[in-house]
Image (cartoon, rainbow, N blue to C red; front, side, top):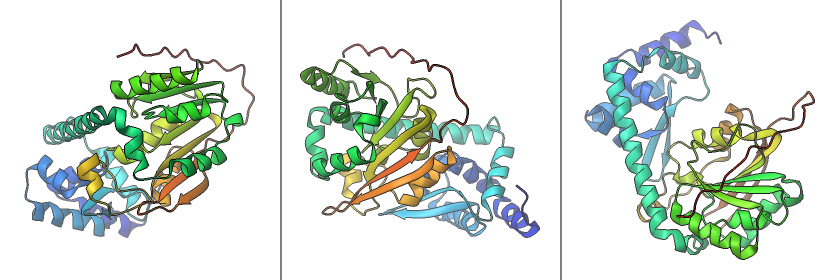
Amino acid sequence: MVQPLETVLSGLRGAGEETRLRLLALCSRGELTVSDMTRILGQSQPRISRHLKVMVDAGLLERFREGAWVFYRLAYDGAGAAVARAISRLLDDQDPVLALDITRLESLRAERDAEAAEYFSRNAAEWDRIRSLHVDDAEVERQLLALLPPESAGELLDIGTGTGRVLTLYGPHVERAVGVDRSREMLSVARTSLDREGLANCMVRLGDMYQLPVADGSFDSVVVHQVLHYAERPADALAEAARVLRPGGRLVVVDFAPHDLEELRQAHNHRRLGFSDKDVFDWCAAVGLTAGAVAHLPGTPLTVTLWQASRPAATDTAGPRKVPAVSEESRP
């Protein structure tokens, strides 16, 4: 997309320094805090903050606060967004300086993933109890069933299935339901629930929300229930959810609205303190999903939000769909 001369010049001036280019390259890979970038680049926090301010002023980056943390990301829209994307595409990942930054970024993410995995492992048997401290499960489930009626859910994928509650909720009504989770302890709990309910059409698999172990376009419905606030890269997680939706398929995300309970980061490893409607629907739109209904469920003190989106139906007729085989992960 062509841009006005002044927009391009402003963007080039904003990015025209080595440290700023390095920061731009990092922010093109996800949302990061000043502390994250200070650690990766090995420069002082005041220096990093000054460079970030220049790029925010130039419209190359977006800045947003969540509690005590401030995140930066590549601009999604606005005058400088196209320029930021164009510059980031010109940067060579194999450049020695950028390659080292990317290696440090992946190391940082691996540490956080390990912390989250350890939390899940410690709390596998207690997960339902911990969740109940923050949300009214009965009301959330009622709204979920309203936004995604079981009789039309078809084949369903539950990302971050945890104890398998969504599977037991939909299992008696759908053709097939698959739950994916990265914790073997959680999968063991979920399998126990499925066995108890006699849901032979439901299964669970070991997998990551960024790399789901299922084929493209293989599900009619996808649910992401109280998982996104643990994600280092929530936009990527929703893109992966969109990948597995069939034409006409529906996605429902259940998570917290923006809040300031900083202790959830410390006690429960929450990476994000909730999401706005705009964030979720912008991420959906970026991967070809159409925004649908929204339900806000105020609580004390947390509000739970349900966002619905869908993949447009195919315009041409397709042959018989092929259902990919999904083998159950062996019991831990």
